[in-house]
Image (cartoon, rainbow, N blue to C red; front, side):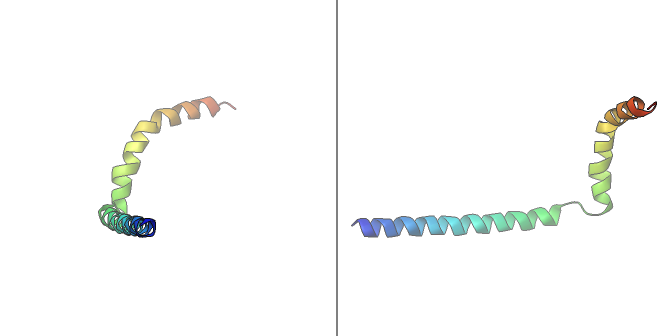
Amino acid sequence: MSGSCAKKELTTIFLFFIATRIIFALMLNIGYYYLPKGYDVYDNVHKPLDIIFQFNDISNFYSTKWI
């Protein structure tokens, strides 16, 4: 009885492992397909980050200007 139960548990764990791997692979493929590429990365990622962090850059510039 316990051997059959352990085998069923191992089968369930194995199937869950395979299912999570398939879902993870699909998520990676879909995510890679929709990722911005090339100039879209610059326009959509770097420009907003430059706007956000420009104040930090300005403060660093003025703090090191007279050294």
